[in-house]
Image (tube, rainbow, N blue to C red; front, side, top):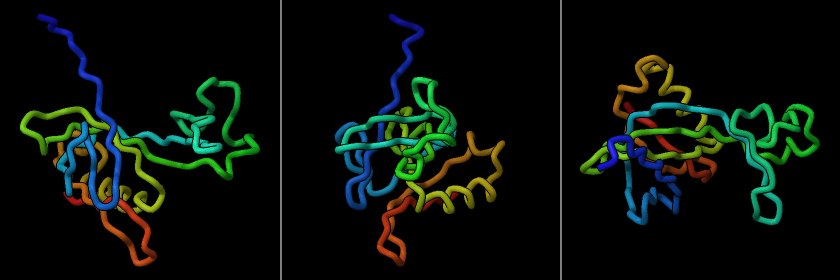
Amino acid sequence: MNCFDDPKPSFISVRNETFIINGQSYQAIQCMIQKAQPVRKLFQDSKLSCYSMDAKTSHNGKTYCCFCDQKHVCQRKIRLSMIMVTSPEPIPVVLDINQPSFPGFRQLVEQIGEEKLKNSSVDLKIIYDDQDRRLIEFSA
């Protein structure tokens, strides 16, 4: 028995209007958001060539994002580290949201309060806006 077994979080992918977690599809998920952090990712030829886990310095710590010549093509994201309570047993999951979802997330934080976010159950659903962009809808 390993009393200190730390489960690795599952990364959530989005396909059409569905969340995919460990090969299972969900139309909506219910989570408690434990942490939100800004992330930058630079893809070249469909491969991740650089990233920043704080949106300030590159993963190798040698480049400051504000001085990088490629920053205008970086994808800005917010990484949400969450506990999914939709499943029978709560599991840690990670979802990177894109810029169209930023305002909805900001509204959620303002509505609930940053200090209460960890203990609040939040529903996430994929929708399309009036410009046909896919985004995450957050509701408390």
